[in-house]
Image (cartoon, rainbow, N blue to C red; front, side, top):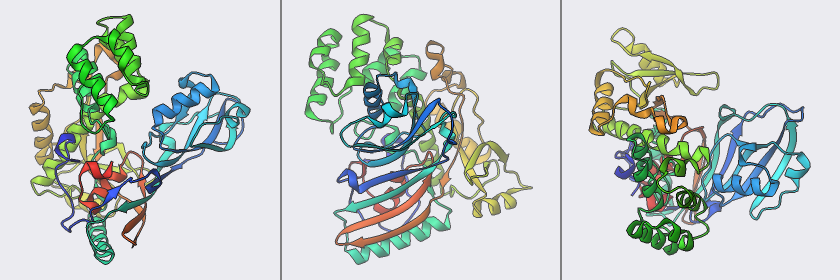
Length: 427
């Protein structure tokens, strides 16, 4: 279920959900980036709009790099996208425009090409627009409309929805990235590798499940190269490294794309954040109402929470902070634990410190000497995310949703409030 295994344990709304299945087909989950375009002019990078169907971001980049015959390090994008979806995103290529225009990949369309001298950065992504369908609802069309309106009203009253990290952060089919990250933070790279390669979890295709099961029992990497499914290319890269360099588990993890390596530690931070937000809500404290001791983030010029602009809530400013939060000008935050992260004080600080203590963590653990680039200093993240441009309708047993979200937030988490459903149904 989409719950305690990734740290999510509470709903923000009390109305019953509409049930249903999300992502019955990729066309039921359509995503389009909202980005600040790099300025045209220059000759360093080719900018393109890339529309893909049922492509996971890392695998798409690998295929694009093969088509262009360039390193994947010469392909840049601002945000990772879901696989089971139709997504449109901005990408940049250190390659001639003619070469990019000539790419032919199944279920991929490339358009709107131009040249620029500015590289695409994460900060260029403002957010994403979503057009989603939920099918096989648990109630009639009319009842689904009423429930959706009630839930939307409750969320608007609290300024948005709980800003949990969604299952995509952890692995939709195999939610293990946070477990690998925990092993890395603990310095147990062998365990991290085996959690990634083996650790069979029901839901994968039978061939993958059997391969992981077999490797878990035999731990014979040369033999595993023969039977691991060819579509598990990242796992095969790790296994191949261990065949060439037995016992080099840090090197094996380094064989993965850099952004995938980073996802492991980030997923563990996300798990800790989810647990803290769930606990605050379980104790009856609204995530959007500041308490004395909370750390509040004010917004930047785009209206998004600024992780660098923190204000501690005290008795002298709690009313002002509450008003700013109601107006969407500030957001209560939770810790993304790292070697330099700041805890809140008061109730939120107690929650954060208790969860970190339960995990047996010290701040220095997020300094990872064996894989320095994986070290994370930590930051803070808003406990509530706004959403906008919302509309919905229910026709013929299909609930249609349209909305936009800031970068770094998850449509599946918002839909969890409307559907009140398990992860298997919405991933």
